[in-house]
Length: 355
Image (cartoon, rainbow, N blue to C red; front, side, top):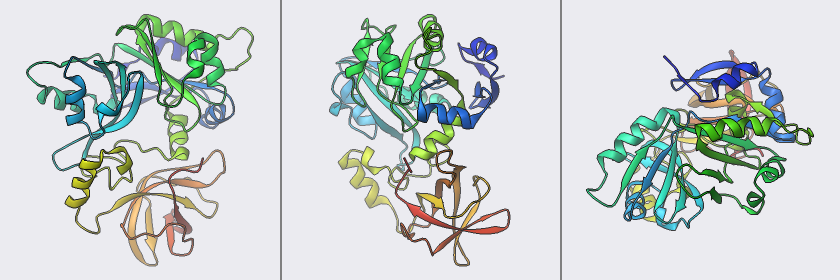
């Protein structure tokens, strides 16, 4: 049986079309993925992301311990800052990618993917020190809302003026407790935005408040996981289970800059030559949507396959990620083709993301 978001009844009232995602029944769209995608790019949309995990870590030894168990260095985070990081297995593969938020000097919030909550919680619990660190898995009891788009700063600022001065990866914690409203300048769309974390009662009120602008100044709309996926593909953001897994290291995924230098050197030294890696592609002809598993060739030689793909709502181009031979060349439009429905289309690899 799927888990239900604390906002599920609101989604039904709004006419959401639902999908099962990592054991959660979540809105796929409210009528049109394309319209919701453009809503974010041109105005502001909100997403229920309460299926994501919420793991609080606190204590005098929390900073030191998190710096040991995570790929990025928690010691580098100032209070009220966030950054992207990984939890790795013993081979350097990614157990999950997550965001870590430093709420106070000794209190951190970890937000793993819905699919990774159990694995992350179990791994952290297994490696928990005897004293100095408290771990509290509050996943499922926190409402998380992403407010994304050009007008997100104005909309959120109209409700919480103190957020207007926040820069990327900064946050505020209103009331300063674990039941506070935590508002961070983070997101998964490539547009301006915020992510809000709070308890269920406050979260339900905030969702309604964001959608009930009496002046209709911001024209905020709800958005589902369908547009969240196309937005993140345009932005060049990976999705766990597609571009990240326990068999790929962050180096192979092209995300080594989110790994502390000492660990990065170790991971690079341990990699055999010619391991496949994740690359971003753009198709150079009008095509049907590229889907996971579609094959990519150099001449007649199979060199990889699609892990994520879509037609960009912004440009109409086929874009996404592929797991490919490590020897591919960027910006060479003559070497590669993709096979879609038994037809060949020219493709090139580019730097990550088109926005």
